Image (cartoon, rainbow, N blue to C red; front, side, top):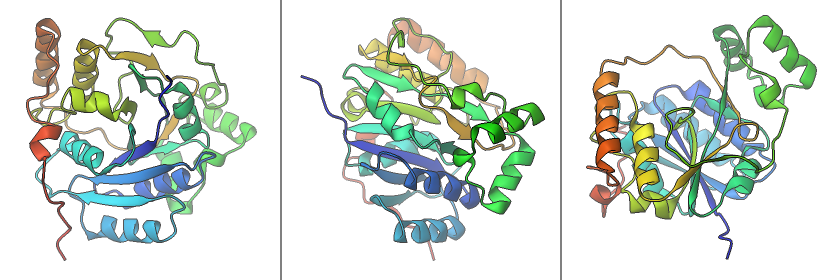
Length: 282
């Protein structure tokens, strides 16, 4: 029997309330509004809390804010806590600087099948366009075809056809593990599958490859990946790249786990069982 997804969108954020507002506002304008939003906050200050409070007051869908103290880059933990706060059986992970297009939820819902995860795709926006979008509160997901083409010609978008073309659910399954296009900024996983492998592994230090590790462990547990390109594209607002001091060591961990066929996170969902939620001081 085909399982029906009840969708929770877990949006990670850290001290970038203007970008978060653009992302959440785009969620409010989805064609399919049968979902909830969980803001998974990796230690932002009160500015983000105030933004989320204002967004929640006008949200057309249920919206929760899950916060943890700022103790460095802990996106894996934020995503795990967001998952635990969710009520849906299908979790779409979205970064707080990735603006979804109008059919984002609808397309993810169409691609959802038991035994599969969906790795979405992204369109990179330039610094100039990003600053304009945030300064002028431009609905970038609502830009028309001609304006998108102009953005591409100006170099403000690195791709444009992918924002307009839609490919059916054919030929999307990847039956071998590949690092390509694994981005936790746009990733959909059944909650039961996350629980099966203990979620994201919080033992990863710093930025890098905790998303590939999750997909690898799910693959070892029998969950195949579907490519969400030409269906689930998000518009990725420009930002300076994070420090990548630990990327090499994190990659080595994933390579070792590939050899060992590891399925379980060292520290993940189960380690937060019975945990009380934190609140922003002040």
